[in-house]
Image 1 (cartoon, helix red, strand yellow):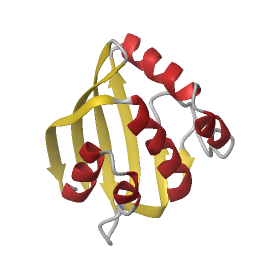
Image 2: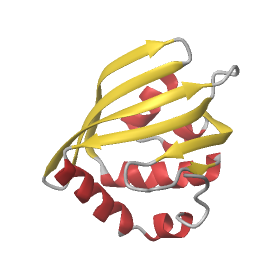
Image 3: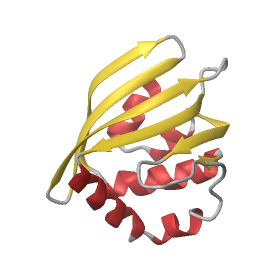
Image 4: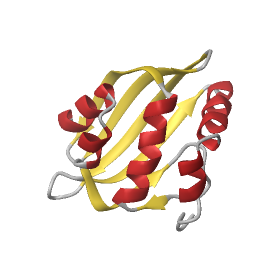
Length: 130
């Protein structure tokens, strides 16, 4: 989890991608359906890196293969607290990543900022499952 945390705090999308399993399932706080695969997850997280300001992890909770990383950030003038819920596979790669954020005004600001990015619009089509 240290590699993911360090990469996320540094805004290093290539290092983040290196921690993801090929078949990672990403559940966004602003999308109804999850996304599957390293490439689409990398694209989405790359956009998030551009949107989040002053991102930092405030707390990490780990229990075996499951981790919760509580973060603080801003989107414009909205302060956000969120959590990355992560599961790693036997190889130590992230195979599930679910992000939750609060408050609602921060979620709305995040959704608006993400929707404004053309690469995010393009990857909305491959959403799978529910």
